[in-house]
Length: 145
Image 1 (cartoon, helix red, strand yellow):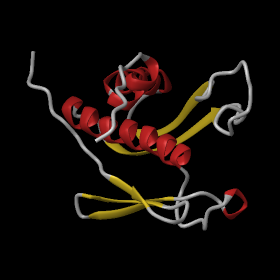
Image 2 (cartoon, one colour):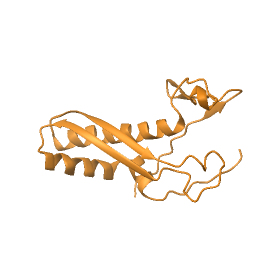
Image 3 (cartoon, helix red, strand yellow):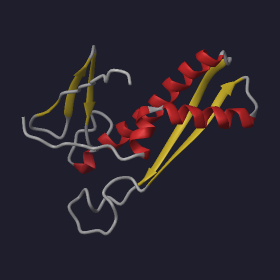
């Protein structure tokens, strides 16, 4: 088994709905829309989550295409998710708080047949760590530091 690698992000929230982080050399912000008490400085956490999934799949696709010597010119990913917001708003619901469905649609620009593109997408998703974390249970600890 290979050595485990730890990735860490530290985020800060002060007096507004915005959450800030410095990730490597990048300043990122999460915020809420104005109608939800934010100032719309950036995407919501849920939007970043879906973007992260799309970005991870695309990044793994480029790696896989290089490894397989596929002429890969790019891809467009559309990630749709459904959820019942009642739970996150503190309301009673029988639905889970998280996404109930996530759909990943991909348009792949590569020298592959439609059947090969589908097989490539499935293989890439199987290699994607974020896809894996969504598909399978991952233990999450909560602690005060």
